[in-house]
Length: 570
Image (cartoon, rainbow, N blue to C red; front, side, top):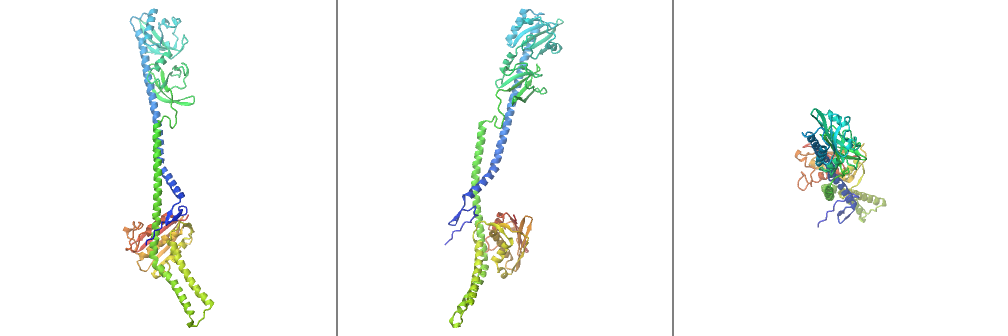
């Protein structure tokens, strides 16, 4: 008939109840373990993924802003080049007129009207046209301001600059002039028949802005033109008027570039490009600038993908946390079963010694009971006194108590108990094993146990029953190593900083070098068949590790072995 093996019991905070030999774990224990595993796995797996996603978004934001800046710069360069070409064409138009061999000096009014009509057919930006003699007087004029004819321009800034320039042309900044209206001048000069003459045309800023609005990318940006002094030359009327000071002026040392300007309360990215034919900079800003920030400009699809990755990671973490918890519980049950099996194996090896230990008080009981039976026999003719009966019964009771103590210690060692962390005296634990369990069996086997205690070791927190099992395993291994010959087992205690140690040394056969790496493996044994389970050292190693300590071994073949247990004092 087989008896069902009882599963190992757990500490009070980890076991709810035991039914039919099986342990039922408390829900609180499951939740706490799963919570810790979930947090650990979240930090291990989701943490790096989250950091990667954040890094990706920042990188994406940076690349997105950089691509927008490059696009803005490309629009500025393209519009500047196109506008430069526009100005070059207007210069060519004026140059063609002044270089015409049929040009009269000065031209007649009908000729000037024809010239203006020719220019307006080319571009509606032309306002008027004027011919200047060597004295700087507008000798001929056609346009909406006839009063300007015969006006002396010799002191006007654009005229003086034109005479100084070797290039024989000028595109002036916008100015009011005699007509008191914003305009700018395109003028060319020549020396014909030993006379210095100039032909100039004026252009309307609003028409120029309409032309700029027709350029590529104009629907994405707001374009304006400023001179080197920071005054608007061409600008939308919705912002400011020409000749108004601009909020910022792009740097002159780089022809094309991008930057950020503070407009009111916002930092606005802009791009600029300096023109070739005029000392102007064409600047563009976004019509609808994207808001700055972590999620600025990111596509919703990227957010959905990132959230899906995080959700998948969370599901994997929750699944792994549950599996890790299940594996932990299973391994803990297996370890407890191994510990219990090791205890049973140790008890089996102690059977002979325990039997001898119990036989002595049983013999005393038998002797006292037989003597009392003889004394009350009438044929002996003796009357027992109360004191003599009491003395005999006390002897029997003392022997019974001795048997009870032996069986109690044995059962206390074998029984599966909950973890019981209390303050203990290390030396008392050792004495319980050596004197209480092993007893006089050592004397019979001619084995001397020597105790070298450091009496300054304070009490410490541990599981007394677990530590007794480890010490019993080590001492029994030492006894087996002596192989029946007389010898010694030396138990030494000491303290090193915040740790205490127990060293169990024997004078037995020692451990061969090839077995040193295997002695703590489960079921590894060098004993003969039926003499060992191979669980003692494996379980001992597991117990000491669970108590926060370590176990080490040194051995010399033929000279003996030393097993040292180190445990924390705190």
